[in-house]
Image 1: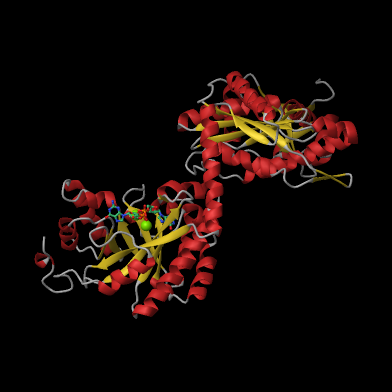
Image 2 (image 1 turned 180 degrees about the vertical axis):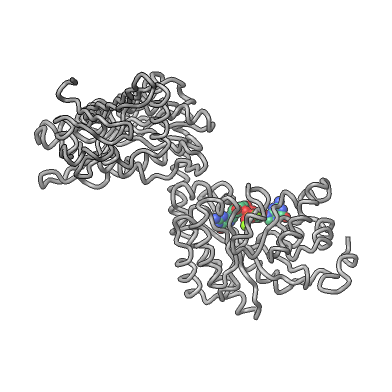
Length: 576
Ligand code: C2E
Ligand code: MG
Ligand code: MG
């Protein structure tokens, strides 16, 4: 019969067990008496679906033989892998006489395999990926990024003066230090959210950190939207060294040198990228350590500009460098100014005014948007409430929210605080969000939006038509206002498609109970058209450019409703 480590089960034509051997008893834990009279299903696990067993039976019926790996269950409930072969024995008339199953327990083998794989692919000291696995993942990320037309950052980090630690404290302390560094680095890199989180792409690539041996660590910054983002992530890595490490009761301060190479800009192959990143690391070390360097000069330039901008912004936030301008909106039914939109401005140290398009994206990447966004909201509510009190008006204020603020800023709590502090009634505040912000994480977003709406605060979709959502989709959100993007308004007179889009947007918005603001209205003809299609509110240079508070106050005080608006004789009376 079979080798003694093979379990043997013999069943009859009805698949009832008639005999088992000792190895079966040892392996499965079922006693011979328990097994006999039962079917082999007593050892069935829930690891396979019914298709799996159907295929097995189809094969047995067709070939009189099946073999393969299968998970079964021991008597104590433990699932285990085994290698099973089943033969179907027929008599001379072709009727089934017996099934003979033989199997071998694979659990030990599997454990060994995974141990081997662990040893081959992971660093035993830190548990991080090793060089082999890292190279493997890196190549995978290159191919993912190629499909998504994105970049991949390769980061090589070397601890400064680590040899000194080893020499003075001994290798054991050195090992413990490396473990602590690994934990902190892994923690840190996972927190970065500079990497595209494409909910649609199933192959969302994970950032990977590895220990390359010695005191060198590597990172993959997968799926970078813009290569400069690598600098932001890397700066965070360096900052993680600011806290000392506690080893054997001693505080140790460490620093690191970091090289960065960007695929495919610096090199397209694995070897090429490794050469680039080593060269970049060398540059960082030559600079005296505690620094990072890109492989190419242009990238160094880009990242240092960005860094300067970021630190100047931080300063501006604490010493009044940011200001708010307010752009009036006119209610077309009354011709009166009904609200304003707050638009942030930054007076740079050299006196130049920077536009939000230049600095909001950087504020977003560096999380500066959170304090900046709070300042904007507080200032806007305070300013407009004070203005209303002085003028005896009920002007509303719209504030733009950025995606990151929306994701991390705990907006409902923030508005509660700000409204209470400023005294502005909730229904005079409107928050502008973009289509792409509501397209993410739909369930969570709806919950936040509902929280906001519950308070009586208005929600507007900004730049409507430029995102990839549809009105039908947006109807499940508690949106009060749609702002037709400037690009459509701009084209109203030249391009019938743009005019049509405006027309249909207004129609649909009204069906869904939303009102419409047209942005960027510059000409009387645009205004006439917008009136004719039933748009409620306009905003744009035709009314006014964004104004600082004092100018706004006198603008509102002196504003005369556009002649013809607010009467039954609507637009024909508007002068050209
Ligand atoms: P947005 O929210 O769509 O703001 C409207 C932009 O159009 C403003 O540019 C405004 O000055 C400009 N604009 C208004 N009327 C006209 C017009 O008739 N013609 C033309 N050509 N332009 C007009 P701005 O102030 O440069 O802001 C640009 C974008 O920056 C804003 O677009 C908004 O997305 C963002 N932004 C502005 N302020 C803030 C803020 O406080 N927080 C956040 N998160 N983003 C802001
Ligand atoms: Mg806006
Ligand atoms: Mg807009």
